[in-house]
Amino acid sequence: AVILAGLYGKVPEWATVSLANLILLIAHLARIQSLRLDLGKPWRMRWMLAAVLIFMLVFEFLNYGLQDYLLRARLSSATSFGLVTYIVILAWRIGHNENSRSAQWIAGVYALVAMSMLFRFFSIQSTGSSILTDGSTAKVVAFVLLLSSVIGHFGYVGLALDRSMRRELKAAADLARDEENHRLGAQIAQLDRQRSLGEMSASLGHELNQPLTAVLSNAQVAKRGLEMGRFDSEQINEFLDKIIANTKRASQIIERIRGFIRPTTVHRKQVDLNLLIHDVAMLVADEADRNKVALTLPPANQSLSISADPIQISQIILNVIHNAIQAVMQSPLRKISVELTYQDEMAIVRIFDSGPGLAPEVLSQIGKPFFTTKVEGLGMGLSISRSIAEQHGGKLTLANGDNGGAVVTLTLPAITPGVVQ
Ligand code: ADP
Image (cartoon, rainbow, N blue to C red; front, side):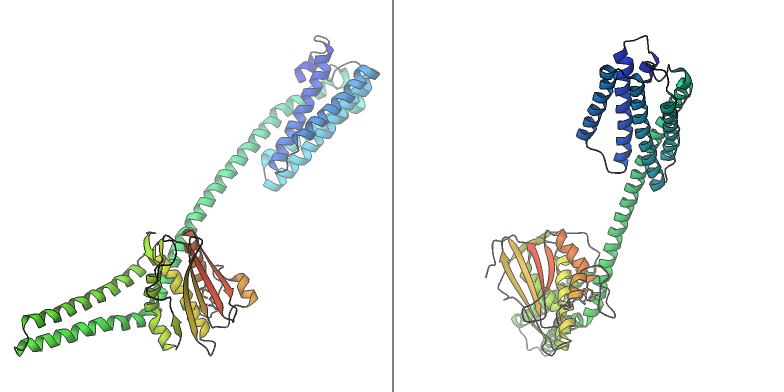
């Protein structure tokens, strides 16, 4: 546009005036749009085209219709002044918001351009000349346009660089935060498991005691029988079988504890959800007995398979039953029941308790990390459980039951079609 304007008199007037003006207008609008995009509020293309069209119609009407060259030049200067001033305002706002030097440079340089346009507006006298050949303002305008095209455009490049650098920095920070969250989450889950294990140790001691006592008494009886020569080999065999069976049971229990406490990588396999519920119930049986809590489980012959990491799912159920035991201790009736159903290809575990239920303000906060109403609570159990359920394609919800008390529902995608009795 500037070159065309400079060639006034040497090329046809439609090129040096109309085309140059059109290009200049589009250039201003492109600069404005670029800044508005930066602010996240771009103008609609349709409106911009309409504005260009209206401007050109008015401009050509003055040019060819009225042949009022002074007014035409004033219109073009005033429009340029308005648009450039708007560029200054936008660039200033971005410079202020994002603390961007480049945007501040753009604002400064275009402020000069705006002033030169204003100067031209008031000083135009001759008619039928172009912006760069009009003697009185030509030098000023040419200098400012040159300055703006160098510094202004570097400003725009700088702004784009600023932006991409900021985006990269933000992406790096996000990544670091995700990794940190992941690591912390795993650590907290591990801590939570260890804490649960501490609370369960009484129950485990009790469980291990049974097979070990059986092993001891069987071995003692067999030894005495052998010493007294009263046992034949068949009887001895029987005692040895019992010893083997009880030793296996004890080592299974230990394996279960080891599996539970080990930091885990997710390990999915086909799991019988009912068996898993019964396994977990065994871990809390002693705690429930001690506190006189009646725990009702789904019938043992029921079976429903899911594809899941058994340790993680037992952690959810353990945590929910644990919370339920603590809740029912506050009420005279201490009942917890676990139900297992199948609906729409999902396995649904519902855990009802006869505790005080959940107050509305608690309900809205529940499951948020570190929300707890307990003096010694961590407030991580439900939030970890919820994310485990989600990782498995399911969900965990809490509500109040019809007869008071809380109902926790764990939904997980099932493998087998329906509950097999
Ligand atoms: P914590 O047990 O460490 O407090 P949780 O995330 O497991 O952490 O539980 C968060 C809160 O949810 C508990 O402090 C308790 O107020 C509430 N809550 C959980 N389960 C029940 C329940 N069955 N009945 C009543 N309140 C419950």
